[in-house]
Image (tube, rainbow, N blue to C red; front, side, top):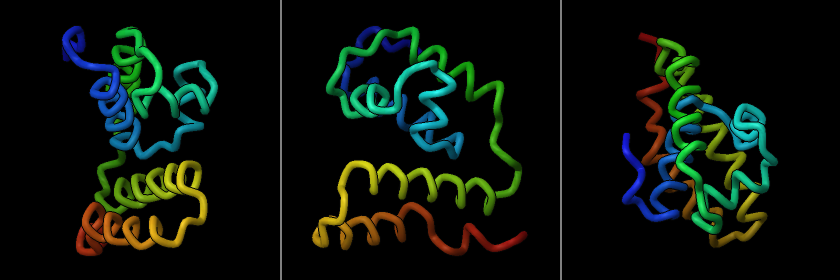
Length: 116
């Protein structure tokens, strides 16, 4: 995927999407990209300029580490990564917690976790 014309915010979203597709938390992706977790957080949030190298590297990692065939396995790991991100960025704000629970329900419906 060409990222030359994307803004830093769009590149950051792409990087986050790849990480979540893998079911990884920021610490795992940062280690794979050989950077600090806080720097990855800034990249994903569009607060830093992202070199295309990092997007290309993340895409290569995604090809080299395909997710498990089990939808439940993938969903559980994606949910864990999402919760880790939430806790790292939002703390314990009760208003944000309510919205996060709604987002979790929409992103990770329970029927996806049932064994097939």
